[in-house]
Every structure is written in structure tokens, then in C-alpha cells.
Length: 138
Ligand code: AMP
Ligand code: ZN
Image 1 (tube, protein in one colour):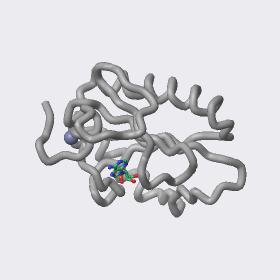
Image 2 (cartoon, rainbow, N blue to C red):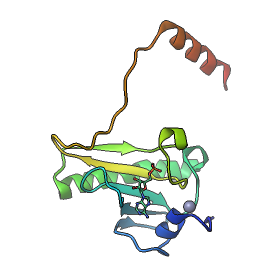
Image 3 (cartoon, rainbow, N blue to C red):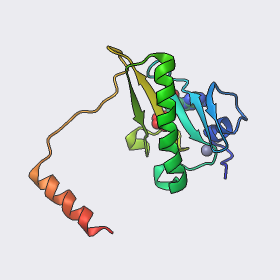
């Protein structure tokens, strides 16, 4: 299942060339063209799924195993000091390409990649509200 106008479908399936770090039957791992740090890579499934909500469980299991394998190898290759493994779902969450992908972002002591979010404080009201709503679903 590919989507005609999807750039990541074309990259994942080799119709558009990319700097490929790894490839198998289901996935291609490429260097991001707008890297947050040296070595920023993306895991792309070859099939088109817009986001994690729609990714089949079987691929979701494989993707985290591949992420682990890649960050172990990349840490040795790049001598980085840590990794952000990030995955955005939906425009409000920062997703800009609507073909599921997982970011592998090498981190280096004192780099300025600047990944993060503003932290708040969990209020009693929010806590109770969320717990109650979650209990209602299932
Ligand atoms: P997201 O914001 O999570 O959807 O991430 C999309 C990522 O894809 C960004 O980090 C972009 O720099 C990257 N990107 C977009 N187009 C390309 C491309 N043609 N080749 C490689 N990376 C790309
Ligand atoms: Zn696609």
C-alpha cells in the first residue's frame, strides 16, 4: 500500500534517492535532510501509514526493535552521548510529513539541538479528570 503523492513512500521504496543507513523488506532508514544534529535519521516503513494510530501492531513491534538496533550501531559509529527517539502524530504534535516515521536524533554533550518542551505541574483536578476519563474507555 503506497500513496502516489507521498514523498516518504517514494524515498522508502527507492524511487527518490536518499542517504540510506539501513534497508530491509519493510523499512528504510535515511538521513534527515534537515538534521537537528549530526546523524539525525528517520525510520520509514515502505508501506504508507499516516501515523502511529494507523500503523499495524506487527510493524509497530518491528519499528522499536529497529530503532534500538540503529541507535546502538549509530552510537558506536558517531561516538554520540545519547539519543532522542521521537515520533510525531498530527500537525499540532509537529508532524509535517504524514507518512509514519520515527526520528533517531543523536545527542552530543553540550549540543544545541534544543529538543524539549515546557513543563507544567500536574493539578489534582487534571489528574482526577484524566484518570476518570481513561477508566471510562475500554
Ligand atoms: P515530522 O515533523 O515529524 O513530520 O518530520 C519530518 C522530517 O522529515 C523533518 O525532520 C524533515 O527535515 C524531514 N524531511 C522532509 N523531507 C525530507 C526528505 N525529502 N528527505 C529527508 N528528510 C526529509
Ligand atoms: Zn507514504
